[in-house]
Length: 470
Length: 51
Picture 1 (cartoon, one colour):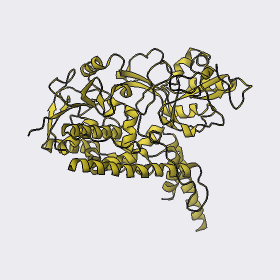
Picture 2 (cartoon, chains in turn red, yellow):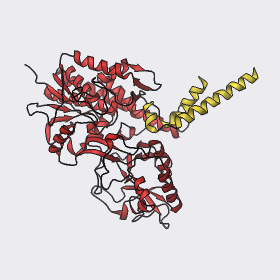
Picture 3 (cartoon, one colour):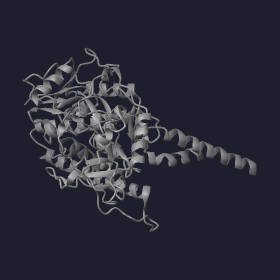
Picture 4 (cartoon, one colour):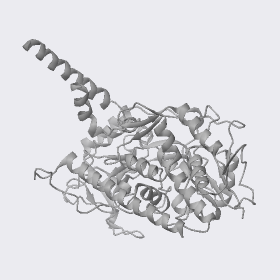
């Protein structure tokens, strides 16, 4: 019996990894890459898996770093990207950095040599042909306009962003709740809310003025040529609002109305910064209305001027850039299929993950899901406590829908410990019997999270193997 | 002997400060790219200074 091939559009990290996983499962795969026939603004070669920016896969520490844990999981799952990354490693301290030419050449050669893989060069303009019954779209942030238009025709306008304003996201456990407090404006309970859904950080007049001064003085990032698109309405960066007038923010996102400071009920705040829960776990909060294009280095220092955020740790900083990604929690089912047309699966950055390793990881998972479906043995998704499970959960389900009207709130994100379900019973004492605090406590928590992830992943692989053997 | 020990202590302290300064100037994203987090800076600088 011949098995019909699965088509993959896009030969970046996600597409290459998906192709490898499918081929290794014994299913034929056709990988479509538009380069060199049609180039992009970012790529320089015609190799598959070309790294366009940094050559680093970031930390390789699988015991206390989230991306290091993802490396570990991908190696366990036979990842081509990790195998070739390891083989073409260059010295980079705690990071796994690769020789980009050697790496891309090795990935390309491995796929070309695989008997189940066919590589076709040429652009897929518009939606994939109707006779391709299983397709993985892994076209990344530089998806060609014709294909983007095709996807948009299926999903409706506005569901495929091209240009995005991003507000910073903070780890909840780094917010000082002795200063900040939970309350919704006028204690209003929205759908799924309790009336105390926001974290509020109060500023007095001097603090507000100092904050505005810092915003006005800070360095802003300049747009690259291909990012020269106008702002979305209602998505003005805060520094642009501050330039329009010193009071603008106080009448905009920092309005101090409808709130009473729990810690100091008789004093009205001059301005308030609100943070809204960003994931279902309640471990991450975004700074409401604080989209910004301040330089990264400036952002942390300026936002830590806000009372309550003086020790804030950021899961991601704000930014504005051109990007093509789906509103995945709305559009994709848990198996990463487009609800409007389930023959299409998505992988890589277009799904709303960020970073090379994350893109490849979603490619790996999508490839496995598609191959299993083709072979008629559907597999369970990885457990939420694994890095892979945490990442896919962020994309398809873990993110809560915004309480207010406004621009959609789903944002691309790197893997981070805030996406993992919280863990109980972490050791609170060191080997010497002293109570752990600060960095030592945080390290113990991270180590507990990665240890749990490793056990869960091994269990998942065991189940999948048992299924395949049946 | 004693003087050279002092001199080497001072040199390694200066190297420590220099590393801390350089790394602190990087953004979180740049640090992530190096496989470091901001809380690692002092540890890395200490190891580098005594190496």
